[in-house]
Length: 535
Image (tube, rainbow, N blue to C red; front, side, top):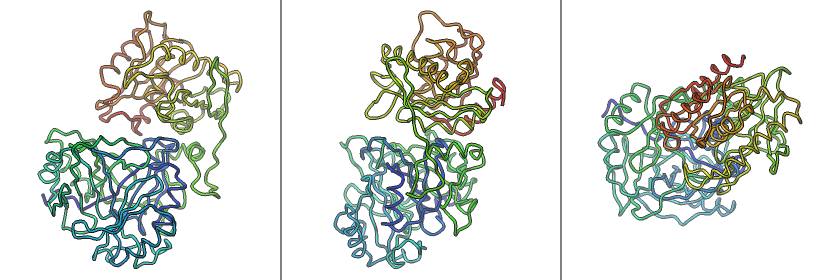
């Protein structure tokens, strides 16, 4: 396995609530550095914040997706439940005093796998621990974080996965990924991917009988492991694929290249290259001070800025706009409206997925239709606190009566907004993801003439009309994933066939991923849009 060895932990990505609160805790309490402020490349309306030591070298970074207003998750089987951080020996007393001073929820020092550990929780309740190790002082610290250098955090130490039955997970670790067993204490089994030292450990805790974890605020999204380069990454991808498991192709994350897969217990893992690193677009002394965007998102910078929540009180980077409401029949929609740059241009109606809001897909406007206006309503239905455009009875089972009503409401809202803002109601093209794509498809089928076209990302069949509408002259782009477990191929193919039978000009594009709106798909949609509706 030496030719395909993992080097250690690369980073851990978690989900937080308010970005400013998260920044204050990880900078001001833990003394870490905000080494990169960028966005989730798959959801540019959401921050992606990277905290680490010094220059954010691989193995030192915790990153966050802030999901403001989303419900808290539940830690359980199938999740990374604990992130361990490395600190110098004899620092535990200092950290206990600091946690007491700052009101941080924490436990008592304990010993695990021969190491002294101190558990604590961040403001969203996520579980972390400090681990004092002799090799910690050899790793660089962030010297300007307000924590004495001989007490400062030195990067990631280990992660702990909670697994229902660990046999298949342990087999993947040792037989495919090259991990070695280090020690076992009861139901805790420690592995290392390299020479046993801080930053190489993965602990598997067998939790048979525990409820499954639920992703949300205060939970870990994925765990990334270091590989030297793309050659090693490809070799590991082949090993994983040869076991019958699904793994993505290489994705460009700007500062590293990534591949993703789920281990048998359900935890999302990533293989991430060491390079090119965070100094690619900022000098070391200015890391994390300004919004950094990859080249393919630069055209959308103004809209992205407007859609992001400020990180501090005096953040001049961002100018969030206020929302408005336009009556639409018996309901109304909180929404955002950005006028077109060219008066004769049309309007893009962007429709978010479950759990999103009127800000989430605003950056799609400049990406897909730079000169068009953007109308972005918030779904009026709440499901466990998450906005949607219509009710459902279960996953994939829609409330048809409510769908009919909400479809009429949305069509009425578009007409009312056109009169209020003065845009051409005959030049409206929808761009929707998941639930937003489904309500857009429903408008096409139930209220033909409302939309000149639609870009439907990860859609399903909303309903089967008794009589097909006349959609001649309507253009539809459908983008879907072959591995989508929410909107399966059969549903997508049926929707495309139904729209074609109705006379619509339909373009169907598949990608190898799952339920997502990724950058390559957005670029394909833009090319399609430019041909049908002009630049």
